[in-house]
Length: 67
Image (tube, rainbow, N blue to C red; front, side):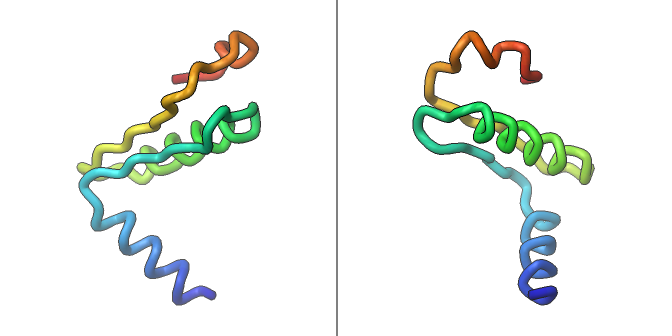
């Protein structure tokens, strides 16, 4: 398991562009996960470009969330 996680980490660190997305008609959990993963990847630093992508309309209920 640790080897797989290290491979994933190496791929992330070697990437120049990363797109994070969620499922169709996302609920609050999906949006929270999308934002958390995007912010976590940005905290790694480096020159990579990280984009969060959600093509669905987001309910007004979730407009308080960042990004």
